[in-house]
Image (cartoon, rainbow, N blue to C red; front, top):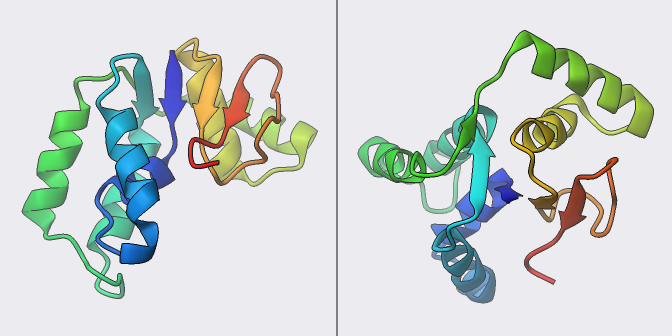
Amino acid sequence: MRFVDTNVLLYAISSDPEEAAKADRAAALLNEPDLALSVQVLQEFYVQATRSSAAAPVAHDAAVALMNALLRFPVQEMTVPLMQAALVTRARWQINYWDAAIVEAARSLSCDTLCSEDLQHGQDFDGVLVVDPFR
């Protein structure tokens, strides 16, 4: 199973002509059946997609509808054990806490791949391999 990071969701709704190839790739990826995500990813998507300073802010109802559609995938909730694991991962790998929480959410759902352009392509976090789907 593959875990998708927030940037995949944001590219899927992008109307920026310069991001057209990434938008197409993100949309295709979200149509595949073997994906997972976390509550954190959904929250980050909502905040970034609907912020008034976004190039093309998404309306609340449209963002919520997309988030509800994504609930067809397994979604990892934030738990105390996940938070504690993220703190260990953050210290061990010297990445920011939010990225560490993404890595640990992927691990919690037994994902072997983390689809993200925010972390280093090819980085292996003890069994969770980062793959940039836009390369």
